[in-house]
Image (cartoon, rainbow, N blue to C red; front, top):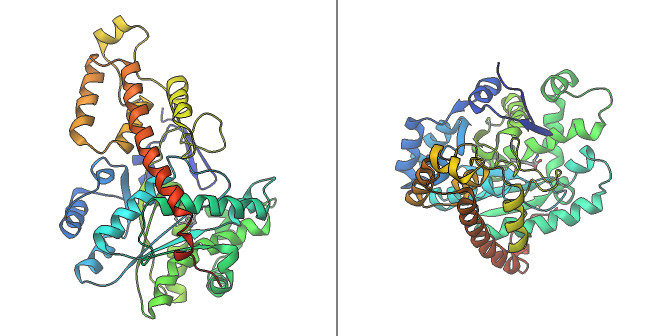
Length: 372
Ligand code: TRP
């Protein structure tokens, strides 16, 4: 029997079958043909693509058409602030930076500080704004070009956005919103309206450039439903349909599901101290190893279900090293403890660099901000 899983913008759980998700969401796999085209244009491929971490898309081919014609396009992504940034959040941002660098493309970064205020209990708009500015340090630390990157909080840029949100809102009926998002009579009006705000940045490239300009949205696949709606609305109000390029979720430390801020000890945050990272991985990272060393040596480990190994596929760039680890673990030559030590080392090295850049970001965020 097929395993149960849930993927919506508000909930991700279970053992996700990504091939089924492609069909369910009506998106396309990122196949060899499209990757070859990108490789030719960018001069190389990011390892997220080679490892199928980014695995699906909608209209990415149309973006590549524009790149081939030397036509300008924009990137757009976002982050709803409600807590600290963890290793999963960084994946689309790292990928955006790569695209920005290699295809020379501007980026719009939305911080919808109203989103989690509408959807979560006990968070004030002051709380979300505080998290917004904390999270922006993580975003800037990724290394975006300040000349080509604009970051905005919805509550600070709403004057600009409201007109386009109204255009989108008028084209969205209650029955569409209910069908797409599963809203019921007990959802508040903010939750209903919010999706129009998430659509707006997809129209802004055309507004800014004064002519039809495409937009590519790199994000995790749970956000796809918002942009399915945006694609439905866009042509009705004179904008081009946004393209998406979609990634998998970084797994939670525990078996199954994605890394999540709301479940304790399933996430590694960028602010975690090296000791904390070590303890979390040693204590909680689900292991694909066997019960005894003897058994492990004989039967070998199971890298495909091992969370530490999965983290290495996201955070260890060296293909050769990764392959060696895979083989050594699978053959039983490498033990779980050794795999975990390696993972701790890789993650802590990454985080050390990230925190250095985050410290420096404090003096630079104003170069990035857009406000009314
Ligand atoms: N809804 C996203 C979140 O929960 C935030 C977001 C806004 C976003 N616009 C986006 C994410 C565009 C990806 C792409 O964090």
